[in-house]
Image 1: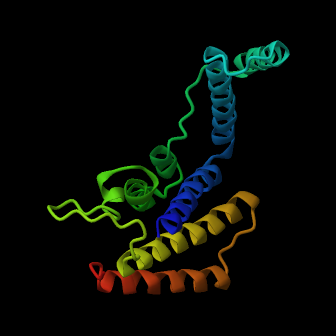
Image 2: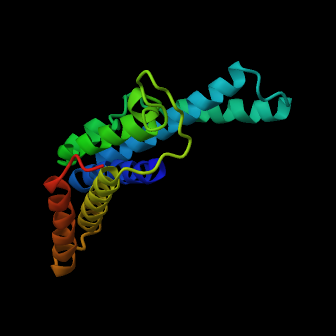
Length: 188
């Protein structure tokens, strides 16, 4: 179940980026390049600071690459955090699903650990807990929402205009999943 929720979370995170790109691609692409260079620079600096690369020729090559990354950085801080991208792409409501799955699947937390260790007096660790039906259904809803909205955003980016019957049918199917989930959100 955790793996399915992590895939759905990744799909939602990709939706945030696609939606932001569909609204205003040039600034987002520029920030993506800046973020790419900044992250590569940070990783290289970490490798050098920890003396992980011991071969002198490799260190010189890495230092030259770092100098190139530094020269390509503009100094602007990219605004690519998922919550901000969701707002920029007008899909901020989807952040609720993203945050939920981050807390209960992607990051170590009480919510994610409670799947394996009940936090009460009678502690039994279950390394392979059965999936909860509610969680399965909700994950399907989140994933289908992310997939369909991503298709629409990609269509906007590419100028394909996916506003046709195929997308409408997919969205109706998604809504039927959502309605079924809303009917009994506490079902285990």
